[in-house]
Length: 117
Image 1: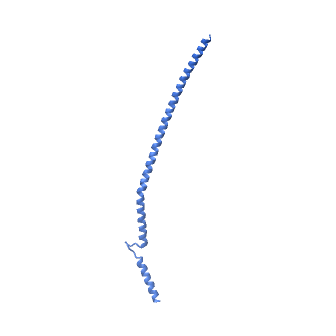
Image 2 (image 1 turned 30 degrees about the vertical axis):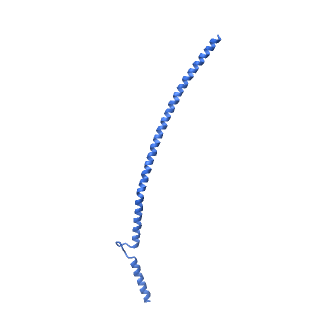
Image 3 (image 1 turned 30 degrees about the horizontal axis):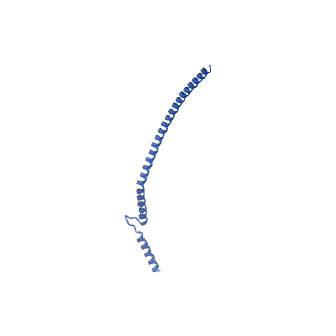
């Protein structure tokens, strides 16, 4: 029985030695936690710059799209005005042509009447 008690005492001492506090009183679990935290911080720091670049690129893209939308709206409005002006001009030309055709028809009618007399 003494052998069992001595073995148990040695086992307890060995376990205690394995769980000793190192690095400023931190145990193995605390060291592992610290290592995980530091690794997480490194990953976060490594991702911060690319995320900021992506955010800046997205803002530039949104600004460019807004600028293109405004330019397209201006061009569309200009085209509408030109079409409106061209339509009005064509209408005036058609009225003028219709008036001249009417005059020619009237003159032809008069000539026919004169010829019939």
